[in-house]
Image (cartoon, rainbow, N blue to C red; front, side):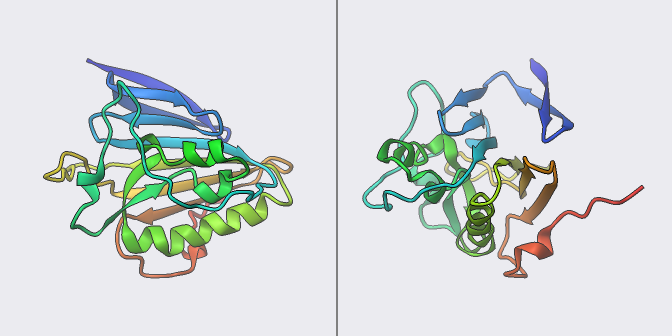
Length: 198
């Protein structure tokens, strides 16, 4: 049986259909709607304001959450996919506990390696710069289109990654949508979704 969930995100109404095994988890510094069927998050959201990098990434390892079926190391072995942080470790490195929380498989998506390490990372860096001047509300949406693309290891490959950033002082929203492929451009602005004026 499926449920219908209506989410209000950034002032818009989003209709999401999801199976009962999808789980909403409050991780403290971010929230995640996780698909146990796809073994990927469907949505990761958080607020960001003047993030501080008090702790550098060191020997952190991804960990699972008891009672929730997630991806694992086998899903990222011998292929072109990274363990893509949806809530970036660098954005939540003000304490070791916050940094460690980002290394949860609940925060980890199957993301093409050059997207993760390239234009997606560049946008995350700009997001942290913007957050030095304004409070942000960020929603990362992981999109699966039909036909679905299951991996032999059990996880599914997302089709797109979308990042919506709301600047809370003005209400302005910027949305970027990336195919889960080797990026054609290194400029994140080339992936901005333009809102048509009426």
